Image 1: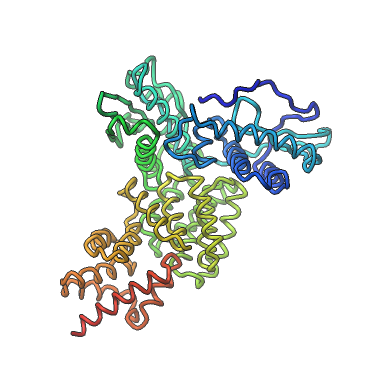
Image 2: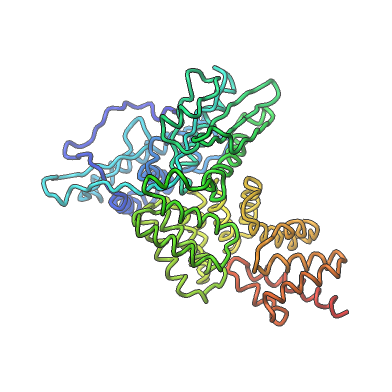
Length: 543
């Protein structure tokens, strides 16, 4: 782990401050008071760093915080940041400590719960200031429910020195740090795979030692020209490899962190997305541990996310409601249930009154349980978008993206919210990155990419994207194909697709712009552009 500070590491805490365990709500409330104070008002970067490290620590990821993580994710430093020469994280951490000291001397002198970042680390700690004799003063920790498969990440194999070792150490650390933020997973690591750093690990031994359902391992090998990274995902019960991939990049691409970040995106998407190779494994062994009902409900939900079929939505909701009754403090279950209601809002807009209320309530509940729940922010963003509150929707999307930038499912929804709330090009870029890292994801993710291609008058690309849309009951698949086929001179095929549109929406041709604009994620300018192309299609049809 990177060095944190060159200062002394002995504590200077007040003698009346006593370290105890706090639940997430108490810590979040204490953090809110600090961030809203006059002391921190003129220090936005210090506020960002403090909010980040407290959120990560509360979520159980404090041990993964280091200088590079804080510089990249809290301070927005670029992928090329080199913490040997860029001291921004260390400087801001020192400033945060100074501001906290100032705050608790003045504005926060009566605060009972106090936050600090001890010298020598980035993880936050909380202390209780004052008399602890009263029972009400002691807050008992309330661990969040963690239903889900267990993934053990083994330190990537490498040679003793050189670029192999640097890339292996950094990439392994990044995989653990990133996957720990993915909902529905329990991640252990990095762990040693054996006696040497070059020997292949014994998957059965790793599983026995960690209780893992899956083991991720691999290695890094550099030559004079290239760096090759190989990763394997193994089933802990059988040792069988369920997914394997090799990435090779020119050695000069590893002067910064861009190549590592790109490879990271592919690995975590394959392993940890809602449609990834871990969460899609059949629920078997975990059922005997008492969480079978919850695990089954979540597995059904993950399958639903592929096609968002309205006919099974009620079954998904019923299963998740039962899971929520079993684990009322499980933020992931609450957010999953909320997102099923949010999907109805995406489909029907403000007409989905009951779904909008349910989604909002469940999203807020999930954030109470886990302030770092990105799905919950996306839920609230969808509700705000449907209400026309674009600025609020955009803020929620940005927060979801900050919390889980590499999670394909959450990043895709954040990208939709961002494009729909005024930043079309940036939102599309986010969606394009999601699809590149996770090409096997739900095919409806290609809808906006096809629309973007039409906006750029690239009909061939639009048709290629639209041809990937196989989404029953979804008007955009046949509509986009009809437009593209007609403009490419394939009139008969266009007629077939248009008939499919009319079968789904018989009055579509009477007011196409209104039908298209009813979807909250389709901006008015895009709906009007598509409607104009539909009008040209209809003219050709009449001729």
